[in-house]
Image (cartoon, rainbow, N blue to C red; front, side, top):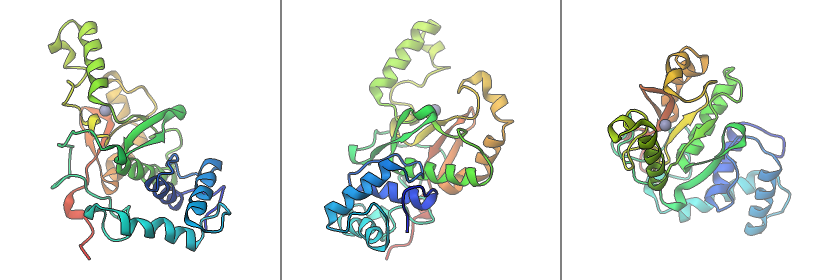
Length: 250
Ligand SMILES: [Zn+2]
């Protein structure tokens, strides 16, 4: 039973599933008024009792509908989050992202980042980063550490950033040290997250960031949520679970 005021991974899953039903809410693990309203809307859609509380019937409807309508075999049986294993996007996956194509619109969602900033992400990266942050909080890494600062960047946006860097640093070659060229950034996939480690996400802070408890926690734990590091940028993590961790076919 989940209701307004609840927090944690179960709430994250509910929020994620609401998004899959077209009722996008922030996947922050907090069952607030926004989530309650979305649950009520969902219950009304499904002909369930509208009370804003996620009991067994509502949960079954949230999960069950997907099992019959989800066209993607990679989501596995029933558990769209793979329950305990992060679902692969690439094959073979593992390590840094190689497929940098922008996600289809149905795979896009937004999360509340640092300072409430709306950060667009691939739905799986959003769901599993949410779970990761919940686990970090349980291990004593306080908010707002690890909140996303940047996520999905379109090719058009990357072109703007690169053009700006060329103006600032004088040449394309010089700009290469600071900004990825359009088409080459993992952020196009929506599965790269720049997160808050307590200092701005600049190279001048890289060494300092590697001293933080939050970064050490990530290096020890991020992989079980499907996230891999980028050595040059401690704040930058990529969702790319290995395909061999997919749940077995039914
Ligand atoms: Zn980044």
